[in-house]
Amino acid sequence: MKKAVHFGAGNIGRGFIGELLVRSGYEVAFVDVNKELVDLINEKKSYNIEVVGEEPKKIHVEHVRAINSNEHPEELFQAIAEADIVTTAIGPNILKFIAPNIAKGLAERLKTNKQPLNIIACENMVGGSTVLKGFVYEHLPEDLKAEVEDFIGFPDAAVDRIVPLQKNEEPLLVKVEPYAEWDVNAKGAKGELPRIEGLTWVDNLEAYIERKLFTVNTGHASIAYLAYRKGITDIYSAMQDEEIVEQARKVWAETGSLLVQKFGFDPKKHAEYVATTERRFHNPHLSDAVTRVARGPKRKLGRKDRLVSPALQLMSEGRKPSALADVIGAALHFDYQEDKEACEVQETIQSEGLHKAIIKLTEIPEDSELLRLVENKAAGF
Image (cartoon, rainbow, N blue to C red):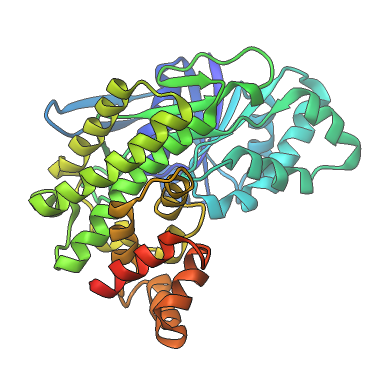
């Protein structure tokens, strides 16, 4: 049986990447620092997934074990030495903390195993594997770097599956949506491309990253910021509001026109992708708190993120992104007191005024028509 090492034994690791690996004939060693979770996986040697939606079903996952990287680092190094693939689903901010152990595991591997290995960071970020590679190289001995470069691939990935916050009576049970997408950059891989059910190897990952970012993430954020302005507390309830849904559709029309023109997506197939995204947000089993989806407005208002980036790209083509400007304006009013970034955004607006705050937060050029458009929308809320 092929062997996989997966960092992160949480809901996304078990309910998405781990399940696809097992389905594709791998024994999965989950790596985590949560002792209770690791011990439970090792006791049960299996877990269940509940797919929720119009056609619910249960999936029983076997051929799994777990490694506590704090308590048994040598076991982890040996697992990496023997692995056929290594993956992560731990959150972008945690990648730097697993890098030292990956470096030690690769050093152990290259003593006896010169088979190519691909390490794929399955995180909700752009270029996750490249970022992880940088952290790993910081901990590699100089004399090993060339060998790692020859045999170890760090192909970037784009992943998409909604796994909501949940608490289940069955401790290892994970509830997930039916939809799942895992695209990986073939150009960054080493050796023969692993065949994994649900994984698509692509030559132009940027297209798939932006398609997901400007459709799923832009749509989710748009619905959340508009819902917050209306006092709606969860995404499912927001999707019952015709005005919010209509506004989201206008946003998707703008980002869709950009994606089709930029990457050559088939317009009909992209329309189907947008319709699927809307249906996903209508799933009552996956409803999330508006404040959780809207959290981190400072990052989400960034020049390269889900709202401002497509708006700027449309402006550069001479098109006016009115719907996106509406949502950016709404995001500037997200003042949830328990969100640190929301408080920072409001403090910036109070101290510097709306005009300067928009420039500082979004990096929209002062001479851009988009700045005036956003400022008018924000002032009108």
